[in-house]
Image 1 (cartoon, rainbow, N blue to C red):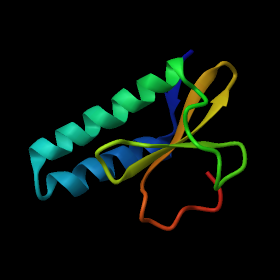
Image 2 (cartoon, rainbow, N blue to C red):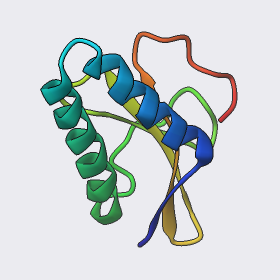
Image 3 (cartoon, rainbow, N blue to C red):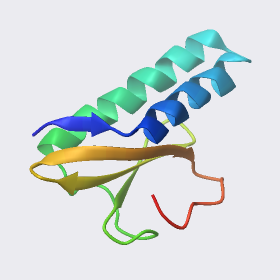
Length: 94
């Protein structure tokens, strides 16, 4: 199973890094590691995330961070749609 990232998701990861790095660059590196590790884990466990807010998508809470990865399974792969802070107002569509 292959992982692909939307442009929006890549932008979200960069913003997450910048947000955390403003206070703690080492913590920002750890956040990146956790995000990418969680995405890789989805290859073996694509149905791990919860289904809730947006139809056809799943959400995986990134342990030890305030971030959630929104994704969908598509064509035998995982498509990462967004990486957002859990406290943020969730978009109606992804």
